Length: 123
Image (tube, rainbow, N blue to C red):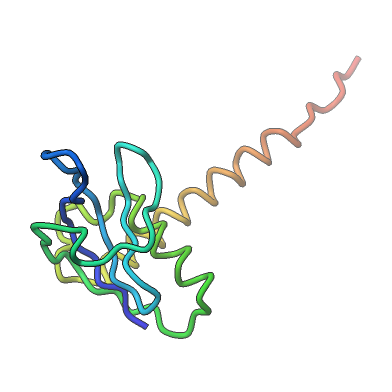
């Protein structure tokens, strides 16, 4: 299953519209509004203007829940705006994996620091 990511303007009642990161998935269009920090669901292409393709990412082999969770993570991560990502799906997955490994490493270091006890002082 592929997710096609792009940048667009969300048409709303206001004349300005909001910039959003979007993904076309087999389950519909999802968008991330940075100004509201949430995922917008149930969109159509008629709700969007000025779509600019960024990258297609192959997420084959995942169930729907995991697929949507990863798509949402990519939308929220800021990875789509980084240099070297445009039209390079493997770059997005590599950066996402790298960030996950760094976060996991940080959690492990924090857990080790919390569980560390000083040896008793010798007399």
